[in-house]
Length: 359
Image (tube, rainbow, N blue to C red; front, side):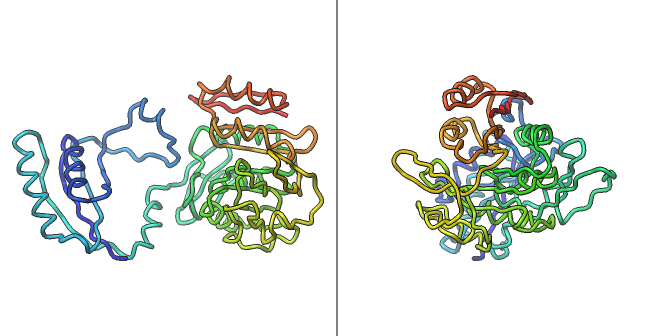
C-alpha cells in the first residue's frame, strides 16, 4: 500500500500540541524526530536495544504522520497550517513548513531501521556486525557475529544481554547443549555456538523472532544440526521445547498457537523422541531433550513463573542462567527460584540489571 507522509517542521515546544491536534483530525499515530537527549530517568524506564545516535539539541523537531487515501491531503495541510498560525501567538512553532511525499510500498519500511544499526564491540572479543556494514577494528581473536535481521527484539547492546554473555563465557563448556528461552533475534543462541556449544535450541513466542533468528544463524554459516529455533511458550501450557530429530520443519510451521503447535515440522503431541513426561496443571507433553544450560534473558515477571516449569528441560546439575531482572526485583526472583528447588550459585550486576545463575 502507498501512503502519504506528511511532515511538519516545528519546535520541540510545539510537538505535543501538534500531535494532539493531529489525533483530533483522525490521524492514528505520529512520528517525532528531535535531538533532545534522553535523561537518566528515561533510560531507566526504557529497554533500549539499539545504539542511540545523538545530535545537537537545537530546539527543532519534526512531526510526521502517514495517511491513506481516506484523507484529503490538501484539506489536511490547510487545517494544520491554520492551527500552526494559531499556536504561533502563544509558543514557538518553528519554521511551520509542511511537506508531503509518497512512501514506497510499505513492505520496504521493514528495512528502514538498518541505517541506525552500526557495528559495535559487544564484549572484550565479541563484535556485532550487520551484514550490510563494515568494521575496521576486528582483532585476530575476535568472535564476529553477523546480523542479517533484528525484526524482533535483540541487537545485543543492552546490559541484560551483556550479563548473559558474560555468564555463558564463564560457565559454558565445549560441546554442551543450550536452551535459549525468549531467544529474540537469536543473538545469545548464536554466540553460544561460537563459544563452543555442541547444540543450541532457541525458542520465542513470536514467529517473526524465529524467522529473524534463522536468518541470523544462516548469516553466520550455522546449519540446523548445530542450532535450531522454534516458536513456543512454556507458560501457556505449550511445552514444545523439543525439536524433531530430522529438524526439517519450516519456521513458519513452528506454531505459537495451541497445545499441538508444530516443532521443527513435528507436532509436540506426536513427538517420538525419548524423553520424560512433564505434567503441569493436569496438562502433559513430552520433553524430548534436556539441556546442560538453560538461559532466559527476559524479565523478572516472566522468569519467576518460568522457574516453576523449566526444570524438566534441564539435565541433572544443569545451569539456569537468568537476566532481564531489574534490581528492585532481585530478592523476589531469588525467593521464587529457591521455592522451586534451585540453588543460587552466582549473582552479578550491571547498572540497574541483575543476572542470577542457579542449578
